[in-house]
Length: 355
Image (tube, rainbow, N blue to C red):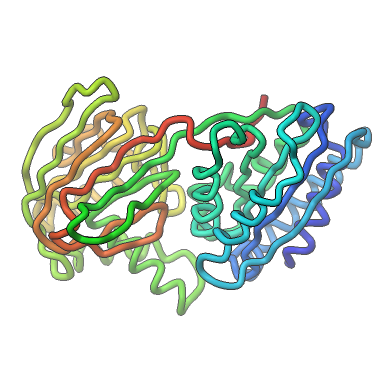
């Protein structure tokens, strides 16, 4: 399947869409042509069948009265989606009045989505409602997309839509380490799950596909030899400033979501409830083998190593080397990068959602 096939189907669907009535739509698709949804036979086959069903359903609707302009941009390297998104935003034809709207679709993996959405955070507040993002599931994981199939994501254009403000996460290492702040739109975490993401990314570069589950099993055996597990100080606060957690102990990982009810690692329910923070304490190899299944499936009740709570900001203190992941993109932190803070940035960007 080619990105050009996706762009042509988007033109058909939006050409009959009742969404955003009375508005001219400027649509830019930022696609990674090497993503699994284009290159891997099983993924691409499903996406093609979904597009065929969507275009057939859209063609049965009345033609849209307002014009729709669809443009396709192909990424060529890491960081290219960010550069494309910045150029699209700067040259937007949408004037911000009631007669036009600018929509940005991503068609790639979580990296493409992350780079594109990050650019929207820098749009001035007075211009922010001119732009909305829709992340289509063309990766192998698609944890950050608006649905795991095109019927759910692109299919929402068969009905009425609106823009909904969403929160993001700002991840700030200590200044002494020299690392710049990072952002995440799904989940940011440190420890074992970041190690799994790192191993998955490295294997994917050699053998394309979804090896997350394989590395969940391998990390149970290998993580403690790759990274020494040291005492970690974890503090958390509500938006009111109330401290809701303050504890120091050895931890396997800490993860914070932009909200609760979040998943990653190809649909692993790491935040299955309303709470947006999880911490898993160090335990024996036997206990790790015993509880990794329930944790992976979001069945955390009764697992004594697991704690959940809600917070607007957390601060982590640590003295050693440990991996950090933001929506699947991994950095290795050193002791000089701590304390590390992760905080919610409310109402950061607009996502296209059903009305």
